[in-house]
Amino acid sequence: MAGKGMAPTVTVGDVEYLSFAEVARRTNVSSETVRRWVAKKLILTSFVKGRQMITASSLESFLTPQQLEPGVLIPGLCRAVDG
Image (cartoon, rainbow, N blue to C red):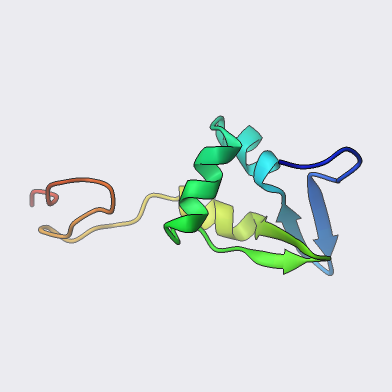
């Protein structure tokens, strides 16, 4: 959880980094859900000024639907996509 006074975003050069709380706010889920996504390596993180953060582009990639081939398993689902 972001502490008092910690910015929800940090910009380094032209890269915007988001706190877990900011990702949770933008995706309308809990910070714990964001932590689970990170633990499952569904979304990548970087350390910025000692804080584990998510780039805005990583969040965008995570949220963008991917084209799947028939028969490919989707993480978290129990069945393959039908063709």
